[in-house]
Image (tube, rainbow, N blue to C red; front, side, top):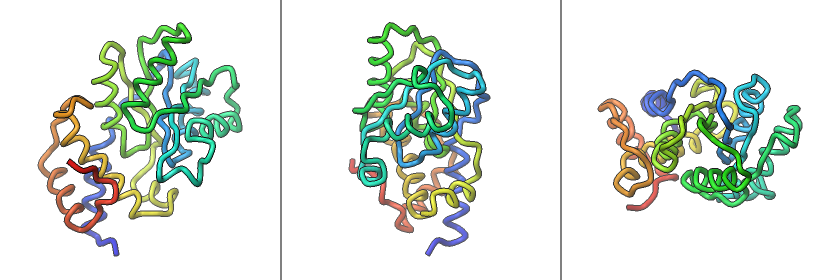
Length: 216
């Protein structure tokens, strides 16, 4: 059972994970693969609004997506964007990435191989992974400007769209853990975490929302 305190704590993490950047035109939009086709939806919307002339969808499969996206996250995202009216010529697919670091490195390599000059990246993720994705991109691709974007949704709206609150809470806790532990591993830049956010994270861990924690 998910308590009122659990919801309040998840709201703390949800709000902190979002960067609150204003979308602006960038060299390319990169849609980070996941279980959530909403990332493809908002990436397509940003393309139609003239925020990027080119899209890269990046992602293989994971334990969360191997059944629902058997052709790979990036390919399912591409298919969704095509349904939404994005021309095929405006989409590149990077099908090998299995984590956020891979997403950034492999997308960067793909664009370089295509001879595409990149000065800025519109980085599109799930709402609760904006900050972690941003911190990863800043570490691995520091010479470009990173603008974070995601679907403009509240936590309640997002949970309703996914229909699995425990999965969302687990993912929130997992994203927060990586902000604490990954800078020392060299995976992302350091981010200051307010004490109320740290306290909310610890309470959610204690209450068992640990399904997406990583060892060490």
